Length: 161
Image (cartoon, rainbow, N blue to C red):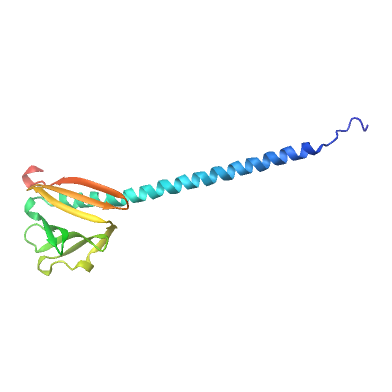
């Protein structure tokens, strides 16, 4: 009977144990690698999202106004300020400007002027400039977090919509 009993060798126990440890190491390495790739991807998307969202927001605000007389580019305290005047002489204006590293929007009465700290913070950006290329064409440049966007926005008149 002793001959029929299998002898258990050391290798019979060590090989499965080494295989399980190796499998665990590979699984942990794969998870850590995936987490690192995911973190890099989300950081890149976040940076890209900030500047593109800001440009899209400014473009949409410009499209809300129907004539070039409602859109004006000002320079206040060496800063570019986009002034969007409400229709029908209501006396209200929306200012979009850069202040302390944040793109801000301020909706106020025209007579009050710009109160720099009062604007609603939109996003963090490094630079913001708007240049009126033609009567109905604006060049918008924004940069921040290593990303840069340059777009053109056309001001449509009421008869052109």
